Length: 606
Image (cartoon, rainbow, N blue to C red; front, side, top):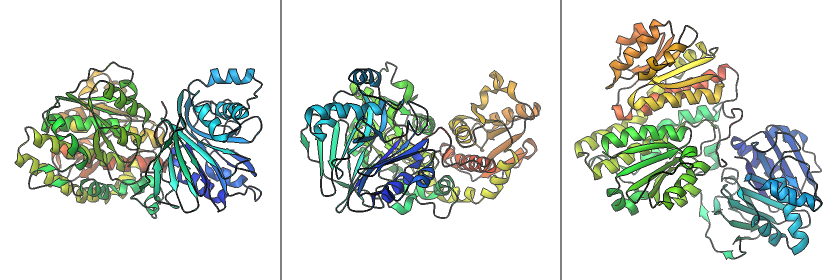
C-alpha cells in the first residue's frame, strides 16, 4: 500500500519527485524519502511536508526515485523509510509489497558479509541486487536475477549511482505504471502523480521489468525476453484530483455524488426498454444467461456494496447470490463451476485479496466479472468482462463517491441481468426512470449539509455509536459505521435492526446513541418497533427517513430527511447523509479526514 514514484529526464528531479509524492499521499504517510543519483538521499518520518523541510539545495539532479511508506515490516522510522541501499550505497531501491522469503534471503546475504541497517523486508532486495551485480557486471541482469529469487509481492523502482539516467521498475502483485513523456519518463504506483506530466502510460503486468531512460523505455519478462506493448491514454485530467475549493477531498468527493451517478449511467441506461447497455459485458452475454449463481467478492466498502447488490440481484434478477469478504474467500475451498460467476468489486482494481479470489475462481472454471474504477488495473485486465465505474479519481482514503458509483453499477447490472431473465419491461422501465432521477435527489440531500453538520457536531463527544437498518439498508448500517470509524476513530457498530434483542440492546443507555435508517419502505414498521426498543432504554436516536414522514418526530432527537425513491435504490440516498455525518463528526474533533491514521487508499498487500 506504499507509493512509489521515479523520474528520469532533463528537468530538476527534486521538485518533480516531491510533487509526485504529494499526489500519492493517500496511499500511505508513515514516512517518506527520495534518492537522486550522484546527490544523495533524504528521509523523514510522517507526511511529505516533513520531507520537504529537510531538502537542501545540494539534493539536485535530473533523475531519482521516491517513496511513501505504509509500514508492514518494521516501525515507521527514518532508518526503515525508503529508499534502501546496498553495502556500497550505489544501488538504491523503493518498494511496495511484501517479500515473503526475506528472512531466508537475509540470512544468506548476511553469511556472505552483507550488513543490514533496517528491519524492513525491502532492504534485502538492494543487497541481493548488489550480490548479483558483482557476478554479472550488468545492472539490468542483476535486477532480473534478483527477482527470480524473490517470493512475494512487489512494485519496485531501482536506481544506480554510476548509471544515473536509468531507472529499472518491476511488478508482481503490486501495481506499477510507466509514464511516457517527451524526453522524460516516469514510474509510479498509479497514474495520479504522472498526469500533470503526460497522459500516455503503460501498465506493467506481473513478472515484467521496465527499463527507462529519458529517451527510451523497454519492457522484459523475467527471462529477459523483450515484450512489445502499446501505450494507453488516460482519459481523466489532473484537475480532477484537485480540491476545487473544498477543505478536504472527502467533502469534495461526497459532493460529487450526483455527477458520479450521471457518469456511471451515461450511455448505459435504456429507459424505454427498461434495461441497461453494458458494453463491457457484451462478450459474455450468452454465458451470463447460463449462470445459475453469482458470488460477489470485495473488501471493506466494496464488500458492503456487494451486500446491497445481493438484495438487488436476488429480488429483480432471480438468481442466487452470495457475498464474500475477499480476505476470507481465498482461504476457503469455494464450490464453483462453469455455471458460477464471480463478481469482484474494487475501486482501485488492485486489491490483493480480491485479486486472489478472481484467480481462484478462474482455476475452478467460473466466469469472472469486475466492477472497478481504474482503467487498466490488474482486476480489469484479469477478469473475463466487467463494468467501469467512470467515477474519476478518488483521493480520500475513506471511500465515498466510489461506493455510490458501485451501487449505481450494481443497479445497472441488475437491470441488465434481470431483463435477460424474469424482469418485466414495465418493472425495468420503472427502475431505469428512477435511476435517472437520483442525481437531483442526492442534490437535495447535499443541500442539507449544514443541518447534518449541526447534528454531527452535537454528538461529536460520543465514544460509541450504533447504526441500524433492515433489508436494503442493512448493509448501509455497516457502511455508515465504517465511515465513522475510519475518520473519527470512535467505536461504531453496524447492526441489523432485527438483531437488537439478540445482544446489542444490552449496550444501549443515554450515552450510547443510535443512527437508525428508516425510509418508508417494506420494513418501515419493523424499524419503528426497533427504534421504540432503543427509546425505552433511554437511548438517543438520530433517524434517516423519507420526506413527509411526520409519524417519527416523537421518537427521535434528530431527523434527516431524504427524497422518496424505490426501495431497491434507497441505499443510494441513505448513504449520503451518513457520509456527511462522518465527515463533520471527525472535523469537529479536529482530525484529518483525508488521511486517517493507520490506513491507506489501496490495499495491495495482504
